[in-house]
Length: 52
Figure (cartoon, rainbow, N blue to C red):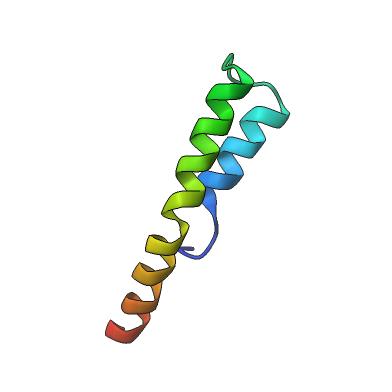
């Protein structure tokens, strides 16, 4: 469950189905935030694997 890119999927889904009334710039800003967090999240998952 932790490996599924939920935040990315949810944001892309909202954009595709036009569920939010955000501008394209807002979507791009939110998408960039998710992409920038990717490396930290992958590092977290690898540390979690070591612990478990």
